[in-house]
Image (cartoon, rainbow, N blue to C red; front, side):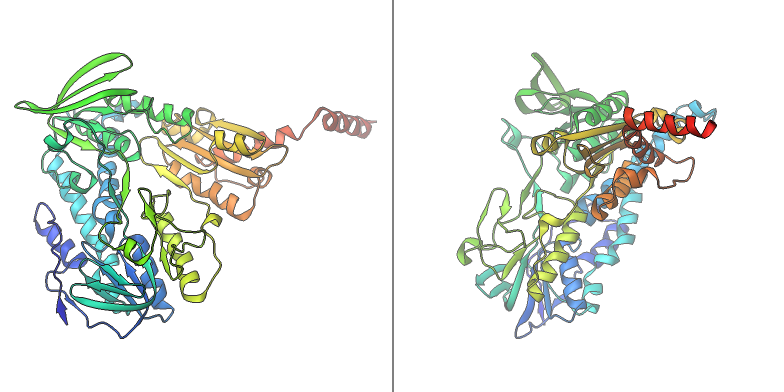
Length: 509
């Protein structure tokens, strides 16, 4: 047995909750096991992709080694999905209190946020969830868990913490980290990323955010609701540049209403450290802005973790976008696979999960499963949420002729009763058919609603079936059924209507 040699970065603050977390995801007394003579599978990285691969393979009887240089659970548990959604839920709670009067509920004026309590709750819930990703759990599943920096030393060997692991197949699942853009002055000022944001002990009075993608928008709205003065800076026009423009506009209006100051189409961005804080100078839509903030969050995308693995030494190709894989998730060395954020443009936990399932089939059983067969939905958890699956409208139009059907939530009874009428369901179908090729939902719970449309696409169910499926009344999911009704009305052509008229007239005779 050998002790780990790589020290993981600290969890801050070092309180009871983070000590509980560390005991699960990076035990201080962990002893790396003695390596097996040869593994069916060595998995590098214990984020979602690596954990699913290791657990699934071990459950099928494979001898598996799992290597992690920092924390089990990866970004999702420690600095991504879990902590961010806990914070978003707290922000929604204070928003609900402030909006209570709209529902005839009177609350004492001056409701405030105890930011320290918000963060403590986040850390407590994260620690409660962590046993699912713990070193102890995976060891009980039969996985040999090694902490330390893994480095390939040959086509079938990997070194970690002074030990050599031999393998038949390997999986690179090292994930990604926050990408830091080349902005004048950025190296001279302190800044946060998603990896450090959740260690904040005090609510910043003034918060600057660079990047209006999902992370930037979610945190901008949440911190504005907590009471921070938030300025959101984006080089593109508006926000959420990769999303449906109509949907993004609904979210943009919501952020502005919650107090977020948006400076889009940003040019000539400069950063400086001043005695009063971090000074941001930027041009937006032809106007110069000079803003000082107390904290700066950089949320400009992700960079794959490919450094230090010696990929070039063993002939595994990679570039700035990550490890290069084919449709079966094989690298340029066919016995070495990759999955998750390190190789995919779909940098989502659920995408990593299902890519890992493909790797298990293909790596252990010479399967032919393809990543291109995956139908991957996603959601941005602002209020309202924005969710999408399939092709975007412009991409769909570039590939085929389409029909588009839109159901505003303002005409859905439950949305009206909930006071959540912002948004819509938009579905694209292949022209002349009811076959779904893409869908966007903007609604309070769009992340939940999109699953019905994902299932329809996966199962080959069209709008005709959706329209004839009974939904409970009243629910916001009725918006999806109403889109089916819109499609069914298009089938009532003038000729069909005329024939039906003749038939009904004949019945009266």
